[in-house]
Length: 301
Image 1 (tube, one colour):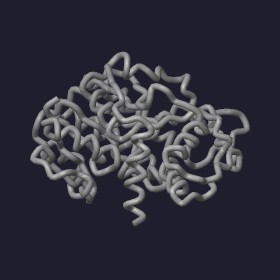
Image 2: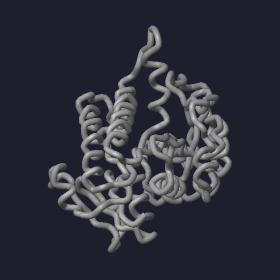
Image 3: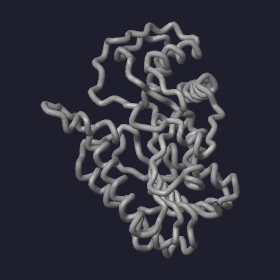
Image 4: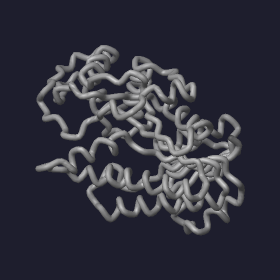
C-alpha cells in the first residue's frame, strides 16, 4: 500500500490507523472535521478539513489514485437517539464509496461493529422493547449493506471490519473498560451484570494493525471479526482487570440487569483474520490494561 484515505482520521481508531500507516511510509489523506490533534506531525499525512470542503470536491483536493479507502467517520456514535443523524451517516457512507471510485481505490474498508449482527434478533422478535441505541446499530448495518452493494457494482473490493472493543490510551473515557478501571483505581465498589455474556477486547495498536491488514489483504465482499481469538465472559475479564490493577474494589455481579442485546460469537469465524491473513496480537490483556491505567492516572492527575 502506497496511498490511503482515512475518514474520521482524528478519532480513536482513525488516528491510530493514520499514524501507523504514515510511519510505514504510506501517504495518507486524513479527513477530519475540525481538530487534528491526535495526528502526528508527519510529511506522509495530508490533513483535509471536510467541514470546509464539499464531498464533490474531495477527489479534486486529493488528486491521486488511492490504494485503500478506510471509512471511520461517524456522527453521533455516542448519542445515537437521533434517527436524522443516523440517516445522514448512511448517506455519507455511500458518498464516500463514490469518492473512492473517483480516486480509483482498489479497496474500501468499512468500520463496522459486531453488535450490528446481534441487534436484529432483539428488534425483530415478538414483544421486543428495543432501546434507542439500536438506531446506531441499524444505521451501521444499513451502511454496511449499501456500501458493499455499491462497491461490488463499482468494481471496488469491499471489506468490513466487524470491530469488538478497542481500548487503550485515547479511547472514550466513558467506555466500559475505562469506567471499570477508573473505579478500580479508586477502590470503589463496581455494579455489574451477572457477567456471563461473551465479550472481547483488543488493544488499539493491534486493532489498527489488523484493520490495515484488511486494507492490504482482505478478501472482497468479506466481513472479518476484529478482536482477540479468545473471547471470554465479562466476569472473567473484570476479574483479570482487578488482579492486574491490584484493586480492592468489590465486584457486584448481578447488580445491573443484563442487556437484551448481547454478543453472539458463534455468528463469526473469530480466527479468520489470524488463519487467513496471518494477523497476530502483540499486546496481551495484562500489558494493555497496564498501559491504559497509566494513561488514566495521567488524566486524573
